[in-house]
Image 1 (cartoon, rainbow, N blue to C red):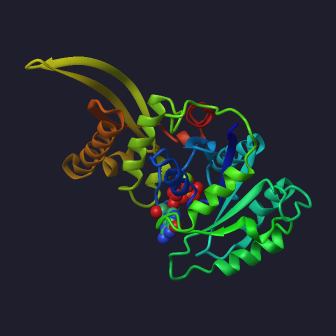
Image 2: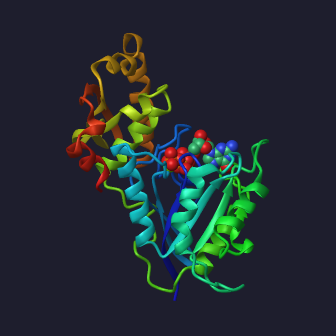
Image 3: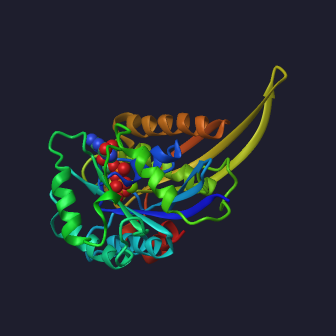
Length: 311
Ligand SMILES: Nc1nc2c(ncn2[C@@H]2O[C@H](COP(=O)(O)OP(=O)(O)OP(=O)(O)O)[C@@H](O)[C@H]2O)c(=O)[nH]1
Ligand SMILES: [Mg+2]
């Protein structure tokens, strides 16, 4: 018998949730960027080990705000918590906790199994992340956890650096230990279950937001409008080609120019980086036709939000 669990990965925006998920899965399954609220969906990354399989569910950072867009993100995160067997709570040791962290801890507190004792399963474990930073104060995060999640024993709180791959192995071992016994959910060669169009769109969005400034990363989404697999061959060499047409969609007409860049330089750089990454992931020769268009005020449009967030 092997272990199998869904593990929701939750915490504040930018705590390092996606970085940890990518590290554990050994592949980039979720976009990482310095911009808070990078993740917009519950994204599953699969960890296969001799002990069994963990399905890590990366979630949007929970940010307290009444804006429609932020409420949808928080809803997605909370829904993932409800469906999970275990929760991995990620805290950023370099930032003081404050009201946002308190609100998340309050949402998690009822989910810590009451009176877990020393060896029982608390249902939640904590990763105190970014301990590599000079301003990190893991002791402060530990005190915060003792105060706000008193039922969570210290032995389930792990100081880590997702960036430097430090302290993470014992955290993963503990997740496997706490996971229930059961058959795997996915075949062992899977590291994610994302649909192909979503994977492509996210990859392009990742390349874009890591090159855009100010409010622009929040103002875009990516849509794959069309794609086609083409078999080809020249000189007797069989090639498999993937042709993709995608749009980066911004909120206002005035933003288009900033995404296109001078002489088209920025959109070209985004497209080229995304194409290379797609080539690598899919092992096909990829042609990417990337364009920019406006979807006026899409962040206030329920239809668009449903399309990109309800997955
Ligand atoms: N120094 C340091 N930086 C880290 C570490 N883990 C993540 N980061 C950085 O923190 C930023 C946010 O990381 P993400 O993994 O995107 O954070 P997230 O929690 O998924 O953020 P959202 O999706 O916005 O909720 C990125 O710039 C990461 O490179 C760490 O252990 N040390
Ligand atoms: Mg994320």
